[in-house]
Length: 100
Image 1: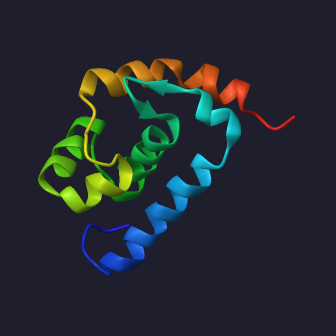
Image 2: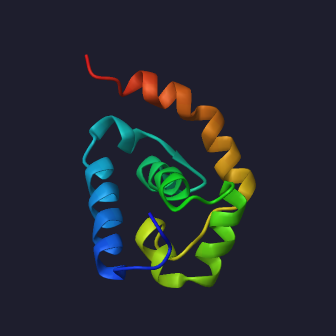
């Protein structure tokens, strides 16, 4: 996914992804520093699909592009440390939310 192109389609895609993740009840049990698991997972998808080299680059992009940050996180953007802490907890979250 390129950073240029049809902005509305891309916005809609990430709104849909976050909305889908927010409807997974088990994910709603996990927050870190007031950031929902759905938002953090949406960030990781955003990083991969947009081809950012790392999360730090994506966070810098989000700081400069408020429309995007509002879609993924709302008003506040997490620190690099918060994202790293979430990554460490991700395995536990995925195990606990796996399809049974």
